[in-house]
Length: 379
Image 1 (spheres, rainbow, N blue to C red):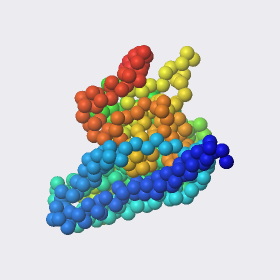
Image 2 (cartoon, rainbow, N blue to C red):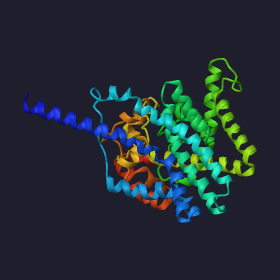
Image 3 (cartoon, one colour):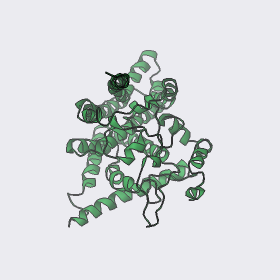
Image 4 (cartoon, rainbow, N blue to C red):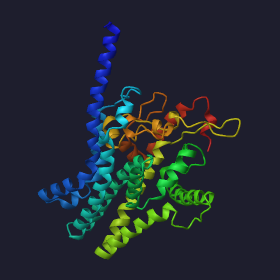
């Protein structure tokens, strides 16, 4: 065996070992489901239950960004021939995402029982709902992975998870709206250069909700069906949300309704904040024929911080996801051509909440990316 062959074999072995280690590191993505019970136990042990009720946002947006910096980045890509076919068919990766859906259903009911038991004060109860909402927001990311797949089990599991946070329209609008119009003025989920988060959010809510119904109505009309019929999948998913709300209201009164709607509101807000940072200021160029250029890795912000990437099922490799939407999370790749965020999503969400700070960090990066094409920055 030649020296070059030996080196190639060693590199392949090293890559495979690293990919195996990374495979099991995705179990970290199950941590959000365990955080509320763990924090409640810590609160009961210390007598600080109401303080620990606020623990999930502290862990997600305080501790994880620090660990991100300490653990560093990961630009490891699987080999398209040697690794990807095998990884695509490993049930382990699918079991985690499907298990997440079942786990969140259990967590949602258990957390309500703890709230109804009078475990918390008013402030602690609000923190508890906020914490469960953050977990639900991370659950939307799991649903995002599932709804992009072709199998009915995964797509329906994704729809169910979205129903538990009252955001079923995401299943339709994201696939048929956002992925078609991403990084163009037609997309409500692509934030513009210099647009603040607080200007973006209400527009995203309204346009995404309305557009989901429009897209589904158009689909049914093309098939010769009426928009308001049993074939409208949005009616099914929103009906599940209504049933969950009704069940909690009947069982726990106004507290059950406040809990379900409150955690849903926090979850969908977290989703839209993430949408805001994923495409901020990036535009697909308009071609001479009036169409936009094909979506590529350069139209989404990328981040390779290891911890947040496994915590979010590789959502931060958003550039590869938009260029090849059907790729499963475990085989998403890093692209050098993609613009890079200065930190992981957990830190960037906090940054987005303070518009002057966000602009001071992100605007120079957008301007540098479009140097020589400043007209791309026009509203």
